[in-house]
Length: 111
Image (cartoon, rainbow, N blue to C red):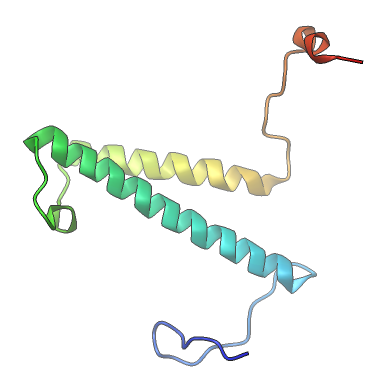
């Protein structure tokens, strides 16, 4: 199977592997690519909200030339960091959900 050329036009290098199974590395790369795309979409949506809030309308192309104020940039950066923190928390291999409180578990026992 022939693959698409590298986006930079440079030749591909041998893949790096960090896990015993290279498929795990590939899966992680796919997840991180999707996460990056999701962040771009979230960032763009937040920018759209800021522009609409300020002007009440949206001209074509305005998102591509938008420069946030220092306060808006701080919000975008904080949102980006919170997203990255939540995403990377999953890599620690620890249970991250709080689950149901012990006193409430019996409500769900239907045996």
